[in-house]
Amino acid sequence: MALFDPNSLFHAYVFGSALWYTTRALCRIYDPEMVIGWFRPPAQRNLAANDLEIYNIRTDAWGLLTIALMLVVISGAVPLPFVSSSSSETKTQQQGSGIQPYAKAAILADVFHHVMTGLGAWQHYVKDSHYNTSMAVGVWGCGGLALLGLVTLVAPPGVSGLGSETERRKGVKIT
Image (cartoon, rainbow, N blue to C red; front, side, top):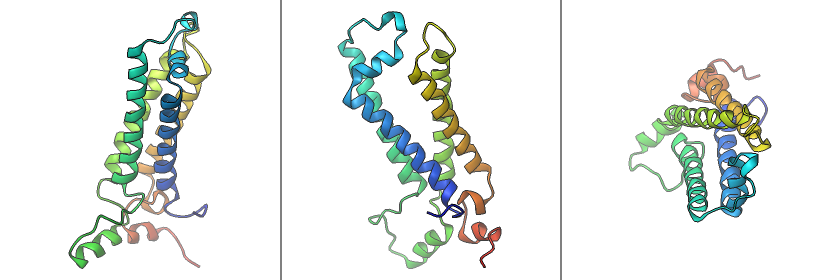
C-alpha cells in the first residue's frame, strides 16, 4: 500500500483498529490475571483474582476479537471470496462501488466504541489512586483511533478511500 494510495486512510483505520482489538484480546486470553491487575487501583494489587473476574476478562477478549472481525468483514476491507452474487450485473456494481454498503456505519460504530473505551480509561488515568501505564496506553490508543476514524469518515473520497471508484479518482491526478 503506497503512502498516497486513495485507500490507505480507510485501510489504515480498519486494520489499525483490528490490530488494536486483537492485541488487547490476546493479552486477556493469555494472562487474564495481569489484565485484572491493570484495572485495580494500586492499593488492591495484592488481591488474588477470582473466577468471576477471570471469566469477565476472557469474555471481554472474545468480544474484542468479534468486534475486530466484524469491522474487517462488514467494512469490506477484505473482499470475501465466498460471498458472490449470481448476477454479473450485481458483481459489477459491487466492484464499482469500491466498498461494502455498510463501511461507514461499521466505522462509525467502531469510533463510538473507541470513544467510550477511551473515556473509561480516562477515568482511571486522571486519578492518582487508579493511574497506571495501561490506562495511559488505553486513553491515547483509543483516542488516536477514534480521531483517525472520524477523519476517515469526513475526508473526501479521494483521501479516505470510501465511496465509488469515480468519486475516489476525482481529486487524484494520474500522471
